[in-house]
Length: 449
Image 1 (cartoon, rainbow, N blue to C red):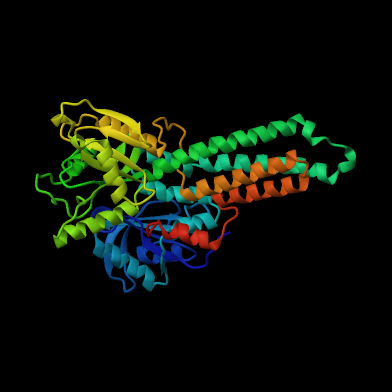
Image 2 (image 1 turned 30 degrees about the vertical axis):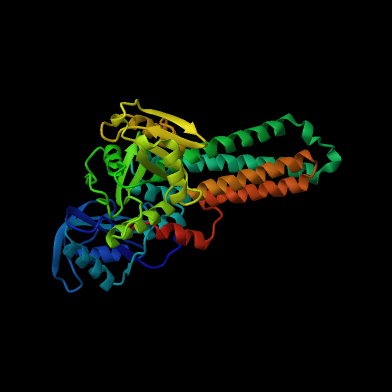
């Protein structure tokens, strides 16, 4: 049974020019509107070549029409897809026609939201749709696809079932105290407790890896002028993305590149050199650099190797936001005839390299993967988000509290903590969630999906 009573329409393919575009309708009137536009009776799951006309009967385009009747459709409702030549005029005309005939413009993510509301997907799978679209590497796409296929959800359900079995076992000891059940000597119960603890740990580790695959690492390259920041960006990107000159202040606006290191997405921002300057434009560039640093996961502070690590560390700490993880990159080792190396000094990682020759770049790449907690072996990885990690952490904390209550003999409190663990876990798949959370999640989808 569907949870919506109106029909929505949107362009399901990217706006602009292309060979083909898809306009999608979903809802109780989708079939009638599709037949009205196509001018013929539509067969379920049959591609029909039709003359598509507007509300006044004027020909819009000649294209393919597909009808997917409820409930066997993506949204669980009647869905009609109009495949036409990919031009903005044709697409807008078709959407305007559907609106004139009674449809409503779809909100961001509303098609997927309807699939969730109609039990075609759970919430983790719905989020995986957006993650698959936005994936920044093949590994990230594979992980999102596994989540879409239900790998993450199945693992969560297994934990939920195990927690339910634990509660049933413990509550039996509460409800039937005269049976003299010694739960603390129950080997089956001990085995279940150990299984849940182990699987919380394993699922948390996999989810953290999944978040890295999805979000990657946001890195900002900062440092004084002429230290080689733009050259470092070019080496990491594998192309001449930034202009490199000997003139201080060449970089003004932050320059962003999205790359992948062994499948890990990496967003790298090259910023203006940080120094005292009376140049108004250069000062604005430095202001924007500080803004980028405030939103970064890590800073790469680039300085000349000849200045030494201690000097670079002092400059970084005086300039960078407090609490921002920093890697000291001592560049231009080619001028010193020094070998590339990496070491930890006073809590900071220091990498000696040459952005000109590329020597030491492999050390920096491995360091960035390690800093993000990324592992290259991702055969069973799935996509995960920050809210999933938070829910898992809350559930595991409640489970551990329940275990302590159980060990202390407080069975009622133990059962209640296990209930809280179940509630936190259920937020991942949407079995227990709030309207505000749903609105926040689907608002970040693209329109038409």
